[in-house]
Image 1 (cartoon, rainbow, N blue to C red):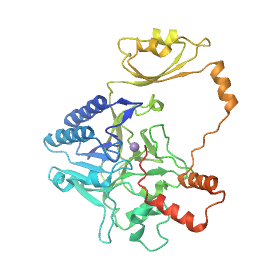
Image 2: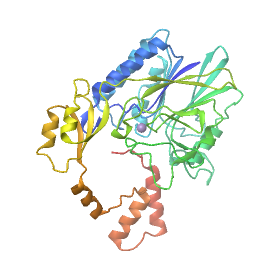
Image 3: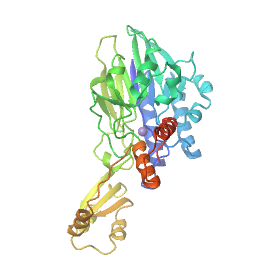
Image 4: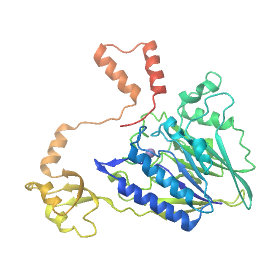
Amino acid sequence: MRIFHLSDLHIGKQLHYYSLKENQQAVLFQIVNLAKKRRPDVILLCGDIFDRSVPSGEAYTIFDEFLQSLSKIRPQIPVLVIAGNHDSAQRLNYASSFLEKHQIYVSAMAPIEEGEYLKKVVLKDEHGAVNFYLLPFLKPGYVRHLFEEGVVTDYESAVREILNREQVDYRERNVLLSHQFYTNQGEKPETCDSETSVITVGGLDNIDVSVIERFDYAALGHIHGAQMVKLPHIRYSGTPLKYSVSEEFHNKAITLVTLGAKQEEVEITSIPLKPIQEVRRERGLLKEIIGRGTQENCHDFISVTLTDEKEPYRPKEQLEEVYDFILELRVDNTRTRNILESKEEEHILLHPMEAFRAFYQEMQHQPMNGEEEGIVASILDQWGGEEI
Ligand SMILES: [Mn+2]
């Protein structure tokens, strides 16, 4: 069975105030064409379909067109979709039973009630059945009530318990779709700047990969750089486009997974995706950077660092005569380095609980009591986790 694994489309995302509409449409169009050409048996979209929980009309239209084009391919290719932390479960769930008629299976919400289980889609190939388990993004607070008190204490126990109650038959072939932060014995996957929501101090949302190791393939979303976690069959596909300058050297691609018979090692290939605009850095003297501009690269999104000791007059205006899309402009010379050294400010990313504790202390001139801590903790627990 051949699987297209994709995640983190983030439809509607902007890059430093520039719309990525055309880039996103173009890359989705490429994916459709690659699906026509390579004929996968199934396409997986592993969360963060949209960039915001309230997507714009335009973002909806882009996703609609994508699903429509995919569903027109004959013979039909099933599309399996889970919600990520950026998606609104209710919104993504909209018309999901209607979509199933077109072999588009959406799972946006973790089980809420006793008798509810994960959405499971069974597909068949020459070796028999493959069970796809659709696990949408979840927080411990979403599912805690399904278990006895004290069983679900963190993200790891939440996912472990939710999977345990599925009673997966590991003698069969099973594929998991999941959108969480998986680590290998505390060792974190490589992250980048466009994942605003994945890093919390203290690793509260870490889930050890052992929880999902027994699946024959784990198709993951959440981390924006393609990579495996510990084992070749546990994998983040990464985003289809570069969503931050820090991804300058990422090779964005569709992960093509070939699943053979049970026990056979999965085969992994990348099918490169080509953006219509590159995202990259330019560093050097203003004169040099302007000199490097060509017909081919002048439409790229660029982040510029000027190293001129004598700061040029109106550098942005001069750069704009050559480059159309300047994301940011920085100066790195003796003057700016001295300023930085004198400040020596340390920016520490605090967990929301720690941040609130510090805020409370500053406002009230005393620490929170146990009851207050409990209230804040339960609010954070329920909090959707959407980042700005
Ligand atoms: Mn994401």
